[in-house]
Length: 162
Image (tube, rainbow, N blue to C red; front, side, top):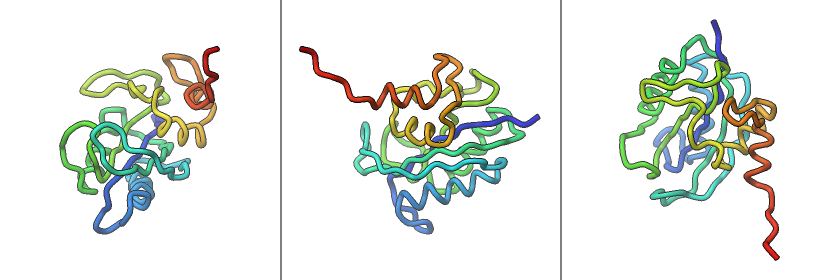
């Protein structure tokens, strides 16, 4: 049985073959086809570094139809990260490639070092912007809100208190 996944992609380090981070993310979206059928690709956006990272990121999202269950898909994504030169390191540091399962058509999943939906995606405009561009109606199984609604809540201007 096939499942649908929303995958977040990010890079902020140059790759010896693919070049700049934006090109790394584009190449990684193509590599995701090894795990299933990539049915949607967001534009690649530039975002500010967070945490210990020093360089700007390139971020995007893609939708994959796959026969893999969540742990098997995660293993495949980790293999792609390693093939692109990702090494274990500190959280939030600079990286050649980061691939995360954000949502799964099966709803929620917890186990084997994996939680779907991704626990922090609701507070990350670099995930929600690309996700809303390609899957605006896909709903978060926890909050019930769509990617478009979550992105709007996170990015809308807020008025100052009077």
